[in-house]
Image (cartoon, rainbow, N blue to C red):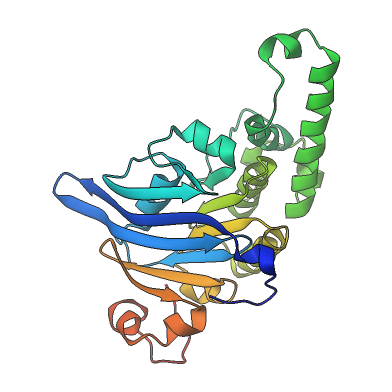
Length: 270
């Protein structure tokens, strides 16, 4: 694994999967996949369509239940937990289709992400108690901070429907970060973005990484993720066939033969 910018804290395991499998009837979507993601690293999972990448993310977030194996987050076993309990521990997933609330403003969409850590109940909020008001203020501050991070603070009061697809993806990222995750799961975050938007998102992900957030992403644009990932995992028909630094993966003969389709030393594309 790449050690650039790595200190001792970066070496702490945040996520570990142990021989995780998922079967749909007779179809094995994920087959005994094991890996470790460490604090503050960007880990990219690549592979062709049907390789089991998205299924793996959904197993980690609790949206699917593994048929075999174990999933550990910060030394706590989470496989079998309800998704809301996993989210409360510090795992946030951003889906490929973003799933914004079009009847709410941009900033209100981001504030939705704060519910994971917000403690004020419905009664206290309804009665406008001091604690609820203070919490609402903190949520607004957090939301505006994340909008500033993604460059959308000037569109806080706008409708998400008025945003471009790239801006909607950034809004989804802001909402995910508002949850204050320690592990961020991204399902094809670059999908549908233009060249300038891809570069902007890469810089954003590196900024998030520098804040100590661990990122596990599924992505088809392998040439992009090779430029920012510390660790790359390659899945093929549900099985992990390779794991290593971007340079190691790009020079792996098995990966080249089954997926990348390039000669060693050349760039790869999705």
